[in-house]
Amino acid sequence: MLKRSFGYKDRAGKATKPTKRSFRDDAKLKLIEQLAQPSSPPSAVLNSAIVTIVVGKDQRLFAAHEDVLNTSPFFVSAAKDALYTSASSSSRRIFLPDEEAEIFSAVLEFMYKGDYFPRLLHDRRRNTWVLESVDECSSLSP
Image (tube, rainbow, N blue to C red; front, side):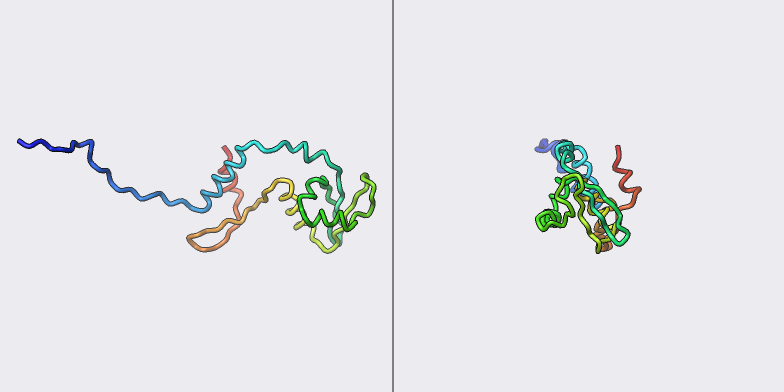
């Protein structure tokens, strides 16, 4: 009799759909990759002079390294425009009376870490933006 030209092992498998991935999965993977990569040693940046920043009507004080502040064009121009009250390195102060301390705290955190929590995440299914919750962030920890 005739022999089959294809055996059982030569059959084509079922077509599979690619798994659906959400934007949150991509954000989590990106965060894990960033945490796994060795970053530049912070000691090089953190050896610069300390600048005191006076923020808001309540004159809340913030201390920041000059090299970190110089990553922002605003603070580079502030240094050039002499918003500092003293030229001596021991008492450099920048006054920002029209800013809010809570907002400046978030900006300063971003300047140091390169990231800010909570992140704003896009939910594509609902076409909305939501803030990342603490539970989502803690699930990333190994």
